Image 1 (cartoon, rainbow, N blue to C red):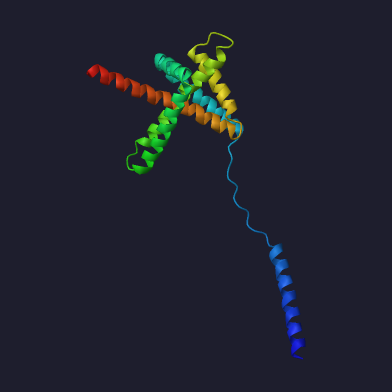
Image 2: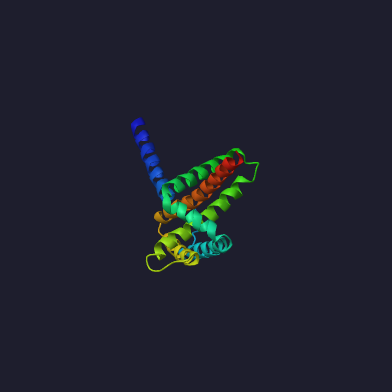
Length: 188
């Protein structure tokens, strides 16, 4: 008799669990909000316009500086890249350590934009000189188009833009460092 009651309870409990499991499976979980994505066309357009505007201003205002930094990248791209990478890491660390001084973040931003524009002109000039005698503006347009299109490639585009940005930022910081050394030598 006790065995029969235990068996009956076990069957009832098992059937109840199966029934509730079916209810649980039938439940719909709330949809997770989708992260908004940026259209590749919009990304291309913004990249192209930003490179052309910033690069155009820099080329028109300081063409000798752009040519000097462009030659520095051509002469020793690895040194420019390392300078850019070290500067990037140091400014990020300085931004974290000295968050109250809201100077390092805009400096990093400006350095990245201006350095990217100089490197864009360099890339464009290297490509354009294969076909014609390029000017800085031709190099800017060719570089902006090529780098904007390459930026659309998932992962690789980001890596390419990072390397180009580090080249440009590195050549700016190295040029500044070299000019300070020269001023120090002249003062002695």
